[in-house]
Length: 184
Figure 1 (cartoon, rainbow, N blue to C red):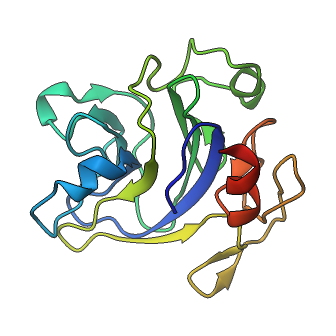
Figure 2 (cartoon, one colour):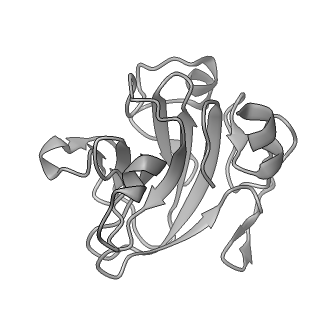
């Protein structure tokens, strides 16, 4: 599920918060260089994450953690809107965009309340979550399910593709083969 330039949206449901839950994106090159089975949201220089304790992190380094949004726990759904063309990322918790962001400003490309802007724009990026210390996640890249549980809503992207729990910002697309061919 690697993607390149474009505007992408996906959701992940936290099924077990553990002691290190985090969700974000990282470059394919960064993952290839990992020597551990431990996958943190935001490892290395090409990784950015939103952690269960409400902080955002860059580079998998706790010294660069900054207050960002609400805390989250088991059952919460974290949405990610990643503009990999312009190097900007936002996260939502249960449909509420964090850091006072709005879906309208995300669609407009306004970066005032983004988690990060001016990000490195790797050629290929992958969604990343942390599975350390009994943390668990289920993903929805537009297939309409978290594990075997169907989403309660049916929100599609602008191409009419996907089934998400929460609204997809205008101009953002599900990470799927149909869109990857159109967006890359």
